[in-house]
Amino acid sequence: MDMEISYLPLSWNKYLNQIRALAEDILIKKHQINLIVAISRGGLTLGHILSDHLRIPIWTIAIQSYTDIQTQGEFKITGKLQTSIKNKHILLADDVADSGQTFVRALLYLKRSQPASITTLAVFYKPRSIFKPDLFAEKTTKWILFPYENTEMIKQISTRLLKEGKSILQIRTFLKSLKFKDAQIDFVYRYYLPKEV
Image (cartoon, rainbow, N blue to C red; front, side, top):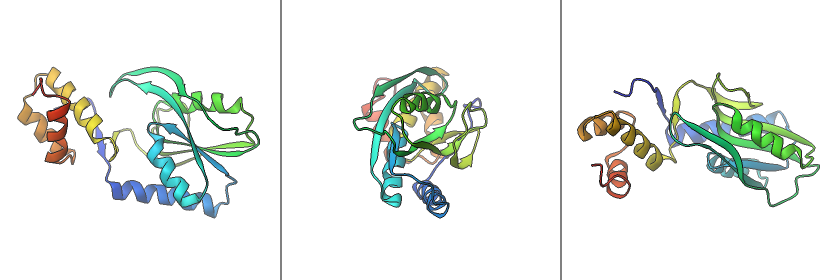
């Protein structure tokens, strides 16, 4: 079932440990950073936690890219910075460098504002990415199931498998193998897939 995609379920505990290790690396190596710019949406949780660990402020930009698990849309800046970053040392953070296009687009946008430097960070780096972040916690080729995207991922995986003709029981069994809980699955099926299930 769903053999085309290999998934990596990620627990909150592992995710938090990875971010802490990245923050320690920044502090030990004394990277000069005085502002985090998190790329919405994937970098929001990451940015918040990094801001806490590093004790520096955070701002966000939004770049729209993924339309579903296997398809990418256009890379557009849909939320711009609301502060000046001129002469600041920026930490640009996103959850994953997948295709790399989001980082490339973000860097083009930020460089126009003349920061002193930009250090890039992702929790995950995929070798197929055209952009390799300066700092990352793990390299993978799998589709990462972040602990803060349960509703989105259950809906996308279920919709895909329903289209492939899988039964609800087969889909629920598969979702549970990916570490999703019954309550999470029930929530999505009740509010986002009621006609399909």
